[in-house]
Length: 222
Image (cartoon, rainbow, N blue to C red; front, side, top):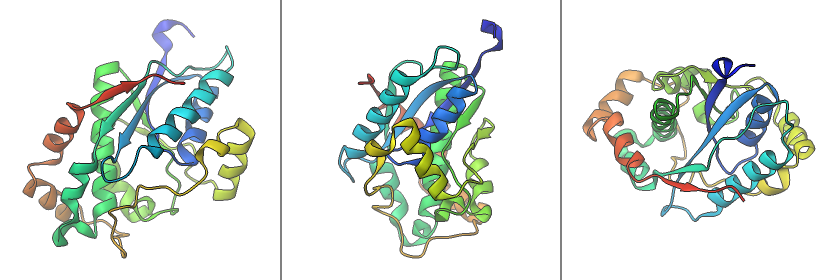
């Protein structure tokens, strides 16, 4: 492809198993990837960020010359204190949907900065509460970019098997901490009006995202 034909996405990469597999698939399809990680420190420790750096470094080192590439450092954006604002009774049931909406706005801000046309996630239909059909639409509505979801219809075991093949599973395995502040009975069918009302009460999701983004830092791959 010529430089004008570059396909560029911002990848929302967690410390879990799924998102590195999604990145690997899109790299193999010729996409260039700017990686982004939403850190929930100080609510959680730094383990998720360390796992993210390890998996991306593995992918960057094993990437073939004919595929896309991981560009630049990992963009780390602190979101822990902002997410804690969604633990009040009126918004807590929607916590995971608010979280993913925040991530999508942050990804869109990064996309504006780097000239990416898409976001990329490791979302898989129905694996967790924010990824039900009833919630994915509300999550996607917060993004200004189309979202690539190459794992959407895959079985979890298929994803694990692929993670083992590409060499990221050993870095990713272990408990994920994204649910540290989550409710026991999360929403599975989002009410967009209710979501927006809760977000506006806190100053608006775009404003919250911009505050998080102003605190971003860059971590080199290992």
